[in-house]
Image 1 (tube, rainbow, N blue to C red):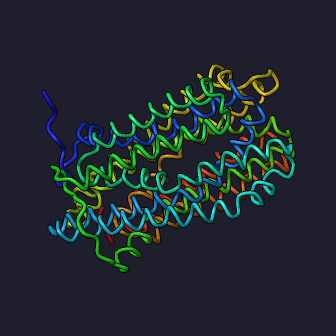
Image 2: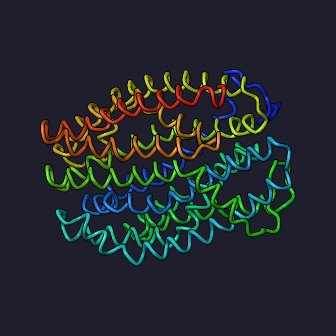
Amino acid sequence: MARERIGLSEHFTLKKLLRFVMPSVVMAVFTSVYTIVDGVFVSKAVGDTAFAGLNLIFPVIMILGAAGMMFGAGGSALIAKTLGEGDKQRANGYFSFLVCAIAVAGVVLGGFGIAVLRPVAQFLGRDATPETVKNAVLYGFILLCGMPCLMLQYSFQSFMITAEKAMLGFWITVAAGVLNGALDALFILGFHWELAGAAAATVSGQAVAGVIALIYFCRPNTSLLRFCKPRCDVKSFFRACTNGASELLSNISFSVVNMLYNMQLLRLAGDDGVIAYGIIMYMSTIFFNIFFGFSMGAAPPVGYHYGACNREELKNLRRKGFWIVGVLGVALTALSAAFADPFARIFANGEEVFALTKNGILLYSSAYLLMGFSVFGSAYFTALNNGLVSGAISFLRSLIFQCGAVLLLPVFWGMTGVWLAATAAEIVAFCMTMTFFYACRKKYGY
């Protein structure tokens, strides 16, 4: 028997909240699988130099693709609030216009990225080998050609949840991930396209996810949203950008910090450092996306009940959200420590890289204890249409605190300082997030 669909307007028990957000969590995790699958094939079938090039340029791609998360999260907050106010027609108008804006933005940002790709790769890889930089340019060029697909995929993940079709979004993401893995095997092992094959497989998976979702919303459907004739609405565009600024800042900051880590590690350990950090980031991205998927899944109900002025449910969602991310933090920290050895061996080809990676995973894992609170806090304020507080949490946590830690701690502790920088940043970010929640408690009544 099919489970009853959970609506945005309902009271969320712990069990019901977990059921509601689970498709979003799995969608977010499967999205990170794209890069991990590429990494496995590239590291084992192409070589360490190609793997280092992939890791060197990938943060640049994510900086540009983060606009899709901004439109998706910010637009979903606006749409959910409008649905909570009872105006479905206006909500569909916002949705349709934003989808068109995302596609256009993807073309523009992809073109810009291609124009600056080579000098950026040369700057980031100034301590790397020329072959690593060459591979970075090749991989980046192909992914930038598919930038509209990446941005649509990111945004539709949020829109599917708001439309109460999270399970459909989950299956679309799974299908795209399976296709990506199958094409990796075909293009790299079968056609011997090497790094270019990995990039082509990733773009193909993203294109499938974006196109299927677009077709669904263009046809008559049973969701809360449907694509209609778009009407230019500059005000809603800027409201979506403001609401989703935290997601944009968070992902841009994450990518900038990755670049800074790579530069520090190139200085301290050469290409081996970049390889080790890339492996650690695969695990970190999976765990971060568990927090991110939960937060994005919980945000539409928060936005709906904010629009409906239901303060008791806002309080309920905030309290349960804190409890869930706290338990997840403990579980993921323990899981990271337990699987440090086998996870490092999947990617590391030499004993030196393996030892460096395993030690890094063990030290880095303590960051997961508090990571979820700031991620959830940022999404919660986005859903309340408070882009200022949400953006402040994301910007300070993922850029200012992280950059400060990764620049300062290695001065005193070398490589150990690099691996502990994330933990130091998360401690400060947790204190800041709790301060914002306390300061805004009377305004929102949660």
